[in-house]
Amino acid sequence: MAHITTPEAEAILDQPITIHEKGFIRLVDYMGGDNRIVQSARVSYGSGTKTHRDDEKLIHYLLKNGHTSPFEQVILTFHCKMPIFVARQWLRHRTARVNEISGRYSIMQEEFYVPHENDIAIQSMNNKQGRSVQLSHTEATMLQTLFQNEQKTAYTAYQTKIKEQNLARELARINLPLSLYTEIYWQIDLHNLFHFLRLRMHAHAQKEIRDYAIAIFSITQSVAPIACAAFQRYHLESTTLDATEKQELQAVLREANLTPELYKKIFS
Image (cartoon, rainbow, N blue to C red):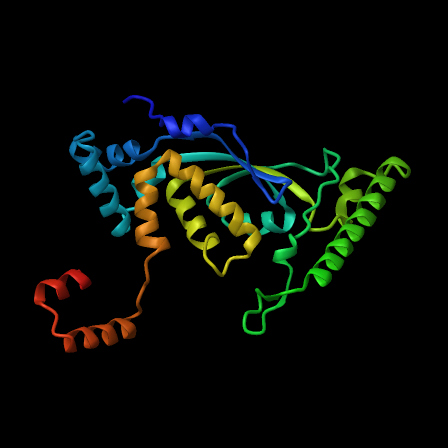
C-alpha cells in the first residue's frame, strides 16, 4: 500500500498560522487522508479504492452512521503555541499524545496574551462560563494596560528569583500567570480530532480556543477534505433531536400531509 500524501497538505507543512499575534498552529506531519479512510473501511472484503464519487459516498456513510474506526487511521501532528489557560482547556481532550515545554528545564519567555479590545466584555448573566456585552474603547484599553502591567510585574519577579536569588526554575515559575504562552506538540487521530473540533468550534466554547480550533480545521481540510466536508455536514451544521422533540416534529409533519417518500427521507 503506497504512502498517502495530498498536495494541499504538503504545501502547508511547517507553515505557521498566526493566532492572536504571538500564538500559532502549524502542521508538522500527517499520516493518511481520505484514501486511507476508505482503504481501511474496505479491507474487510478486500476491495481497494474505487471512484472519487464512491469514496465520497462511503466516507459520508461512515461518519453519518458512527463508524469511527476508519477515521482513526488518519493521524495529524501539530506544533501549537498558546496561552496556558487555553492549553488547560485543550488538554482536557485526553485522546491525544502531547509534549509540552517545561518550565523546570527552560527559562519561560516574556510572552503573554492580552485580549483584543473587541474581545473584552463583562460576565454573562445567564452563562456562568461566558462573556456578554463588550466594553467601551476607554474601558477596554484601560484593562489591556492593567493586564500588561500585572504581567510585567509577575515576569520581573520571576527573573529576579532566577538571576539574583538563584532559585530553582521549577519554583521560580509558580507565580507566573495563566496568560503566559506555552508550546506543545500535539498528535491526534482524525476521529478524536473531530470530537475536539465539534466542542471547541462551538459558539459556546471560549473565543480564544475557538480561534485555534478554526485554524486547525482549515489545516485538516488540506489533509482529508472529503472527511472534513462530511464532518461539517453531519456534526458542525446538524441538529440533534431528543425523543420528545422528534415526536413533536413528526406530529407537525404529519399535519403538513407530506408524501410518504419525503417523510421517510426525513426520518431515515
